[in-house]
Length: 288
Image 1 (tube, rainbow, N blue to C red):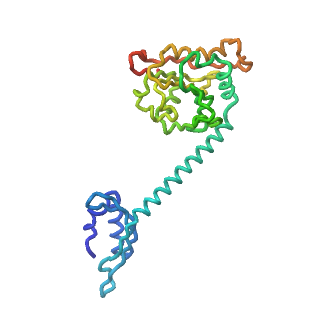
Image 2: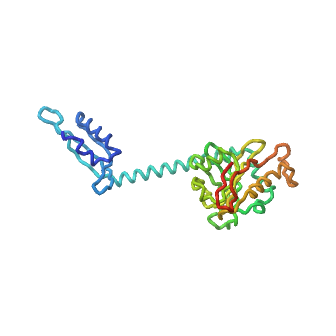
Image 3: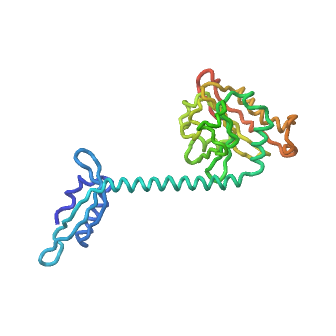
């Protein structure tokens, strides 16, 4: 048999060890049926399907291998696309199932807080200028729901942005920024999100240039955090962070419109201060 190593330069480097191993086995078995990549002289990568057959000498021993090679690049690309589509479909199915379970599992306490925030606290837009405000609630493993969403200006009901009853779902494992927020459970003020390296991984928030957040706490239990962002940079200061806490604390401190459920089981905004420089300087203020 001809030396298999003469084909080494043609076989793709990632497939080479496996293919040469199979060729070595074929010298004993006479069988070789493998799919692998080859590198053409112009650098193009192609997939081939090679069938090998033994040629035996007069004594019946395998003398060499001969065979055929078929270019299956298009077939392989189609198979890869199908596998990719199936993976996307499975991920969407799993996310939808997680969303269904998480929605059913939302605690009464969480839903009550959101209702209180949206209905009884001072109107958020009177305290803080924003383009998008949401309550992000961790539910069901890495899944996080965006509830109580408000957009300014409010989209028309005919707009593509108008999606009633369709909460945004985020996966913390896919967003280093979100994962850090959930782990730290601290207030954050970012004057310009372009200065935040992990910001683009924060699904549904990449269009916001100024952002602040405060953790939401009920009877010392962490429920999630309030996300408030603006399309323009450098819109928020420590004063806006303080106002956000005041709005949430109004329930606990006896706001005149305090709903009955606040009695005895208070709700509050986490009070950890954010550390950072004034946004007027154009620098980023990070979490504490």
